[in-house]
Image (cartoon, rainbow, N blue to C red; front, side, top):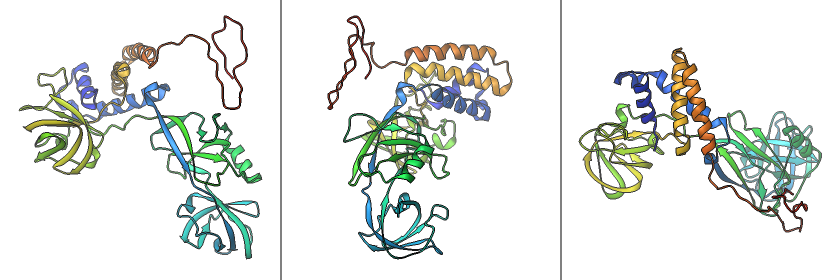
Length: 378
């Protein structure tokens, strides 16, 4: 695996620096900027991943309402769901947002999206969920599809979604979708129009971002002490300082010397991913290994496929030249060369030939084309 440590060492060498340069902020900053930039330049195949949203069933009942305190009180129906804070309430065709859930019988509405007047008698109402937070590594996504239909949902803008939700209560399978900011967290959520009456699922693929880089392997806590393992995935340390921040990092195992990169005079013997940290002296790794009282290093992986690794390193070299104001034009030219090669390598299937005819359960197919046409789209 290409790691944070490897790229730091590469930049020290390429910039004619010394060992002390491993602690300099400009090298670390250059690598972090470069890796984030390259990942966001293109929808690389490597970063495609699958996600599923589980819809919550709607709540139906009747309520009373105190406008002075924005308090909704249940009069009939099941207890208010535990996830009510993520739901909207529809009363007399007015959509209100739930701010908090006091208990099974009481909700408090948002101060802006509330109901305009008191309700002293039991009034029919429904609670439904329309916004679902996306994973923290979300970057962009493809149209989602639910379990009841083969065709994807139709995209609408956030403004259209708000107007559709306000104008009508769309019961049944989800039909429309959009992406909105999620409550000022810096994250995103998918908003679905169409509310299942029962628990249902929605699947989609999305492009994720890369793993955040924190541990380079040059920190004292990432290499202090020695470790042992006896043919299992449990690694025991003596004088170590393992922490939860190391989950997902690479453990490189050496011998009497600290393990370096494959280009060093003391390359690592084994490397594996850390899957869990129990305490400062015990962690779990992906692969079962055997070694006794050896030196080690913990460093973060550069989260990319082999075909992009040279591009990541060239981008880091360019950013270091730019940060240092050291004539980055030549480094930029090499970076663009490696970026072109990375894009050419971004393929996980061979080119296909032949007709592309697509059918679905309703019986439609792609339109008829000339005999020498290679395919079509519905």
